[in-house]
Figure (tube, rainbow, N blue to C red):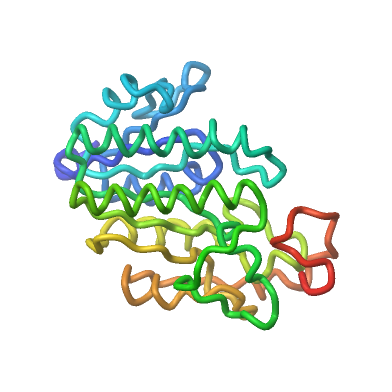
Length: 259
């Protein structure tokens, strides 16, 4: 680490070995000191990696000590979860992370939400879906993200911290099926979006996180204007290689209108 970066702000990334963290880490390292937190850290050697259970209040407070920002990515992203699983893996860990952020006076929090929080709007008559619409989750996972956003708002109002919720689309995966072309977020755009969110000083905001896709299913105007997000990629470049749907996921995709 060079001398200039050694003085950079410290961002703590929960779920530090996960898919999204892996995608955005190269972008973060250009501008921040990074502390990655993951329960599976013992098996990996990665710079700045700490093994901790972010769902344990004591451990969460310890790993957030000294942080200038928290990027909360920990959780289970499966749309097939039961509510019990969603609560344990996603809701509880968010609550504990926010309480630890408050205890440490962390001024900036970015929470990874999901398009599933508004999945029932993924129909032609609503596109591009406005993030200001009331949440309409399409599955228990999406409902958990609605609760995550509510916890984030409460945290912002109680502590004065800046909280940004990113409703991420398909992140860290290729758009191998046509139904994903309207919700794809490229690796580079994921990095751009994350940096923009960490730099924003809004009190509280919820924004869709997708690339500048020709198939404009999710409105990213607020992310552009309020965060300064400047996406450069378009899933249409992948359209010729995208195949048909492989099977049901959840109500995010209506079988008759998912493509």
